[in-house]
Amino acid sequence: MASFDTIDDYNDWQKLKDKRKRDRVERKRPVLEEAAQAAVHSSRLTGDKMWDVFLQQVQAKIDATQQMIDVVTVDFFTATTMTSNELRECREAGIKLRARVLSLTEVIQMPYEILNAGEDARGQLGSLDHDAEDAAS
Image 1 (spheres, rainbow, N blue to C red):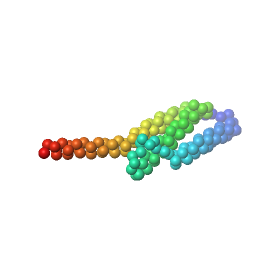
Image 2: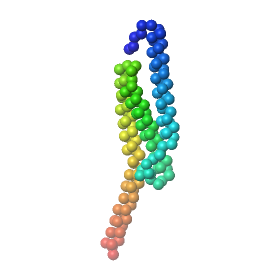
Image 3: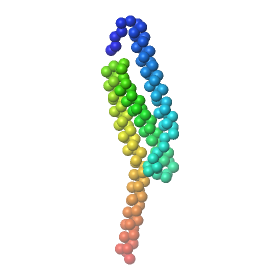
Image 4: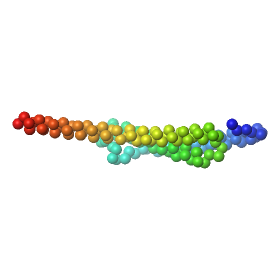
């Protein structure tokens, strides 16, 4: 816990802390703006309108989370007035955010995999039907 010799020291510290909080909030603005316009890599698009809308929403979350990681990283490496608890919380936030990006990246691949698995299954069923017809002939 910080100790202060005078009330002015405390007030200065509080102003600095408030400024850092405002700066952090302002750095999130580009995250939100970019998230609203997220683009999904074309190899992950399915051609199905509903899946593609879903993928765009997940991609927006990935992009926003990546930018939050950038903010946390800057905070962590430029921290001069953070307590050890604040540094620990910052580090933990970075770890959680990176885990979120990995999870969302897996999620964004799932619709494509599901659709491909369905197509493969239909193809194999078609082969089985063809083989059964040949065997019956």
